[in-house]
Length: 85
Image (cartoon, rainbow, N blue to C red; front, side, top):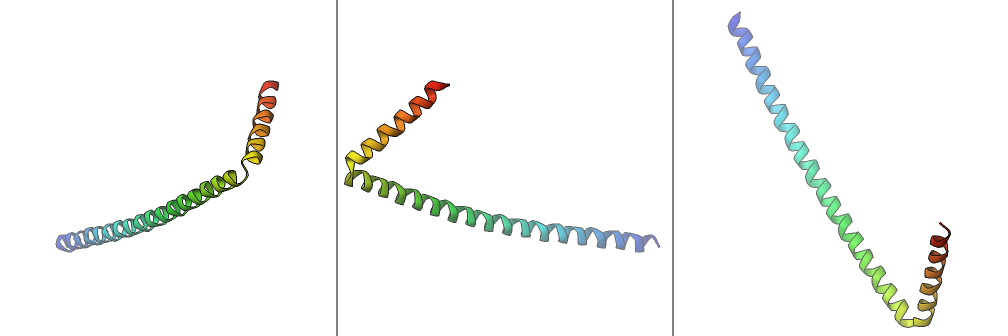
């Protein structure tokens, strides 16, 4: 009877080790997938930021006086709002 109990305990230990290994492998795969998604999203955000900066640069070079007027107006508005506080 004691041998049977020991065999059951060993079997349970082996099953636990197998499941732990399986879960560990799944966790590694999920982490890798998440890292790939994050890197892809980072790359897309970086590309969009560069495109926005280039578009802004182009707009300012095409209309320098309008850009200067808008910047002056925004600065004035921020200054008035900050002064009230």
